[in-house]
Structure formats: structure tokens, C-alpha cells
Amino acid sequence: MRLLAFLPLALFAAMAIYFAMGLREDPSVLPSQLVDEALPDFDLPPIEGYQLGLSDDDLHGEVSLVNYFGSWCPPCLIEHPMLMQISRSGVVPIYGIDWKDEPGAGARWLERHGNPYVRIGDDQSGRLAIEFGLTGAPETFVVDREGRVRYRHIGIITEEDWEETLRPLVLDLQSQ
Amino acid sequence: MTRFQTFIISLIAALVITMPVLAAPGPDETLEDPQLEARAMELYGQLRCVVCQSQAIGYSDAPLAGDMRFVVRERLLAGDSDAEVLDYMQDRYGDYVLMMPPLQANTIFLWALPFLLLLVGGAIAFAYVRRQSAQMETAFSAEEDAQIEALMREEGRE
Image (cartoon, rainbow over the protein chains, first blue to last red):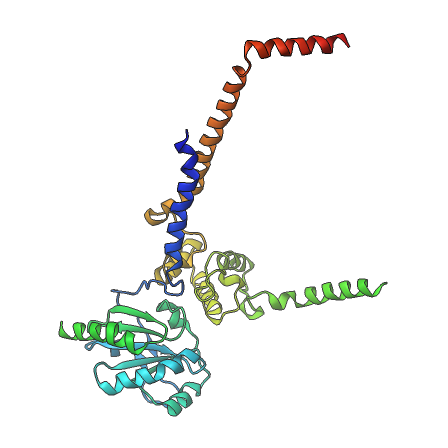
């Protein structure tokens, strides 16, 4: 009976530890349902002033990054120099999807800040973003040769993310 | 009317007038078929906005929530059942998109915890009450019994 008196305290301690563990996780990082799945079928038109759009067929045959961005998205601007750096390094081609932008806004933004993308698709309605399970911009998907998504990065790609996570993964996929 | 009353009435009027504007799904989002519209409204309440996280898409003004409502209507118009619409979203956004977590291996503790706590609490309360009543029955010594009897006799005399 005396031991039983400590039961509520023990229960509380167990729950407190469990919840404290939960607090350490970043709630905005949701697991992607697309990882190890084929890309959704899509065929996006080019953004205004560009010749090439983007379809899932363009993403077969070579390891690539698919980056969701928008000219209205401040974190995308912060990420932009890193994408330019990756593009210049020639390690992996980056494909862009312009998300819910006004016509012409994406093109003007790229003209001002540089274009790191091989091809850019225009997801003006945001319909395709739902197929990607997008939770915000920027988001970047690592796609393997077979057109399967192997990794999703939520938020800005920092130098550290690139060097420690994305670059090794890309090199590994390229060597397979 | 006092100034205060006028103030309260105009405040209520302002709230009532702006209410349709505050409700998230816009007027251009209504489905023509009232039955489908009712099902859509129901589903808006069951799907979580993945940007705002604690809100259902029916109460969120986030552009992504608007896009998710669009997909719900699109699926309903394509003839999906309510369960198929929820599956469609779950396939793309995972369990998290459902406001009501599904009952499965990794959520069993979540679902069972309230019942477990009720059982444990009930058992403790039951044990406590039983011990109290057992103590009551044997609580008085012979000496105390005599005292009680004496007191009761005293009461009876009055």
C-alpha cells in the first residue's frame, strides 16, 4: 500500500520524460510519404519568359535535386546563394518548381538573384504541391536515376545541410 | 440608450457583419450540390492544415489550406467517398494530416491511456474507500462503545 502511494508520482515522471522527449522534436519537420516512392506524374509549363517546363520524365536517368521555391518566400531568398553554389559546383543538376507565384514574378526574381535551375516548372495553382506532400517553401527532394524520391529536405539548405547530408547522399546515389 | 449600450450593440453588429468574411472557405469555394457541399464542410474539419498544424483546413486562411480544400472538392466531384478523400490526403501527407489519429500500433498507447488512467484511478479509489469502511467497522474499542452509549442515553433523556 505504501508503494502504491508513489504510483502517481512514478506515472507523472514517466509521462514527463516522454513529453520532454517530444518537445525536442521539430514539429514542422513531418515525415514525407514520398520517400522511396516514384515521383508523381506531372507536366508543368515553363514560367513566363522561359522555354523549358518540367515533367517527371525530365527527372529520369540522372540523380537530381527538385527545389520548390517562390519569389514571395523570404526563406527561399536566404537559401538562394546556396543553390547557386551547388549549381556552380556541377555536382548535381537542380530543377526548380515555382510555387503559387504571380505570372512573371518568378522570372523577375531569378533575373535579379541568378538562376541555379536547369529547368523550371510553373505550379501556379499549387495543385502539384499537394501530390508532393509539400508543407511549405523551400523544400528540396533528392531524386535518384529511376525517378524515385530518396530524401526530402524541409526548409533552407544550409552549407552544413549540403556538406553533411545532401552532398554525401547525392554522391552515394551517383555511384550506385 | 446609454453610450455603453450603443457601444455593445455596434460591436455585436460589427462581428455579425464580418462573420462571413472571417470564416475561411471563401464564397467561390462552394460546391453547387448542397449534399456534396455538406460532405466537403465535414471533411474540412477532419483534415489538418500542414502549415498551421493545430488547425483544421476548414478554419485556416493559409494558402496551402485553401489548396487542400480545393483537392477535397476535386475528389468529391470525381466521385470519391469520404473515406477515399481522407485516404488520398493520408497517402500524401501521412497520418499527421488527419485531425483524429488513426487507431494503429504506434498510437495504441495514445488511445488506451485515458482508459488505463481511469482503471488505475478507479482501483486506487476503490481500495481507499474499502479500507476506510473496514476501519470504520472496527474503529471503536469497548471503552469507546461504552462512551457512545452513555452519550446516547444522555441525548434520550432530553
